[in-house]
Image 1 (cartoon, rainbow, N blue to C red):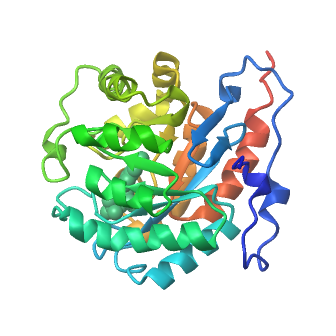
Image 2 (image 1 turned 180 degrees about the vertical axis):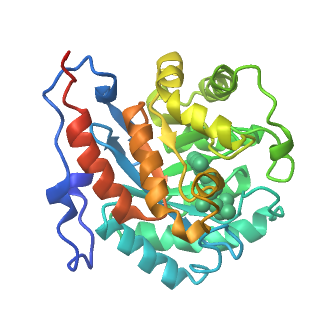
Length: 320
Ligand code: HH2
């Protein structure tokens, strides 16, 4: 299967405008424009086209995630939410069973797997939509892959030595995110020389671990880890400098800014659930600076904004 989102058929779709109609084909415009570096992301059952912004819908099956905790613990409700995100234009959904917000308590592998595996299996069985598992634990990834996960989203960038050995033979896509420490310690680990250079260098170490395990580069996307061992100012600097990271590491970048606290801080302390418009602003800014994949709670808003922004940004600017 080629997981070209324009071809994804979603059972139950109907009350939304056909998402495929709003999706764009590859550009014929100036291939030198930095926003136009395209390609594919190789997943287990095919490849996801990166010739337009890719939207990853967030589905947290946790009691305590910072913005959607407790809403989708019931697997049937989780699948319903995945179906809704597919209708709204998600290219894949990311199922997480452990909150990684600053200070969140650790969850055992058994507990995390019990939350995510039934949901991954149900989405895989019912929806024609790639499914990602958001986990730092090799044991959880192993079970989720057996249940049909197409992607492993590892916020620790292969911090668990066993993770690369689990992912390598599966053929799954891999998100390597930058963080330092753990959710309990990370906000004390924000000392960088140059945050952009240091994050790029630490992501390069994760990429080298993937290389060493035999995970082909075209299976990997990278993520600077907004909010993970970063101050609000460092988050902004990273979003502004995505092109530098992308140029250095040569892999597509995923941006996970959705509803995060730096957005609240910029907007006078608005609550997490009221940060979707701010999230859209971060996504569009990230798109302009080179991000190609976007992990968001509000799929419809991001889809619309990114598609419109992309239709402008892919036209090269002319000298005044
Ligand atoms: N952020 C969170 C979790 N997983 N994965 C990637 N690749 N990038 C991110 O920025 C990222 C991530 C944290 O956000 P969320 O899932 O909304 O909350 P919580 O950790 O409380 O479940």
